[in-house]
Image (cartoon, rainbow, N blue to C red; front, side):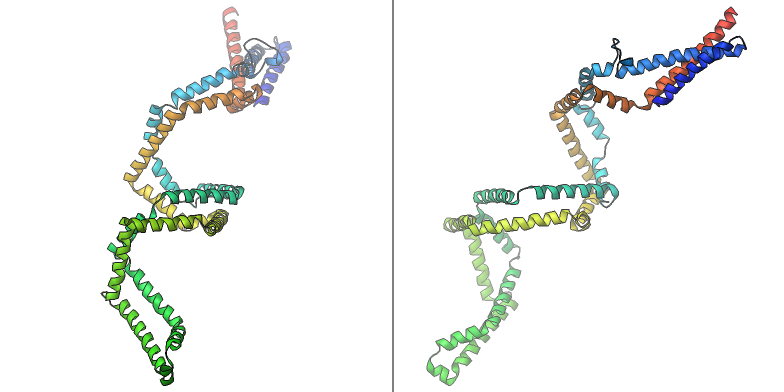
Length: 404
């Protein structure tokens, strides 16, 4: 566009000098000559005006030229003040946010996470997470996490918590499957160690019992009795032994909550466990496996967004899209957050804008503003050339009509 505007100015100069020898040949040549003359004046004037905004014309230090480079600090302050007064005020932000359905837009986006934009964002976030996890020192980070967990667990008195959990489980009958599982485990353990039980009975039987073979019958009776007992406990929900187990669990739940001795015993066991080096080594291994698993998962964002996490994200998006009440709550929270950020950090944001523009050198700000305005600057020159030519032709016509 700059070349086109310059070529038009050159064409007007050629037309001006080329038409001058033929002014007497025909009256129309006078109009062309007047058009070219005024077009050159208009084009040169607008070239000077456009150039004076960004630099000194022809490199000459003419006053009031290179306006933008010479006043970049004032422009920075004015831009920041304009931003502060017209955009980053709580009233403006609240009004703009009032008309926006942030939750609805987020819901539509999240409900289709495999779309182009969602995939790119997911891949970028996954790559960033993988890079962060790989860059961090695993031993140091694991030690910091372990130390934080140890500090929090040391402050937490877990005995009452365990007692309340056990009491709630008993009240809701959630302990019954545990008792059934324990009985089945006992039966399987007895079956696997049946020969060991027989050997113990044989070893403790006297010579007479062994001679008469009663030790084998005694062993069979003991094993049959144990199997029968476990089967009855498993089938009969009101079996006395099952009731004894439940009474024991209830007693443990009460002691964990109200017995100082029991609570102190549990706390002592907790402290010993936390101080045990084996626990620290175990946690370090758990953390390293977790870290490597997260890195591997982050390297496969399609699997991450296609599995349970992706399904959860889609369900959240559908909930946001289809629930007006939830949308109102989320939009209200977003509006309050935006207004709060504006009130608290608006001054810092505009100061960042001002300081950034101030740090730009004259050439940088000139190039950025000139490129932002772009083609319109050269259209000013082209329009100036054409308008100037038309004005010159009009004046020539008036001159001929009035003064002949």
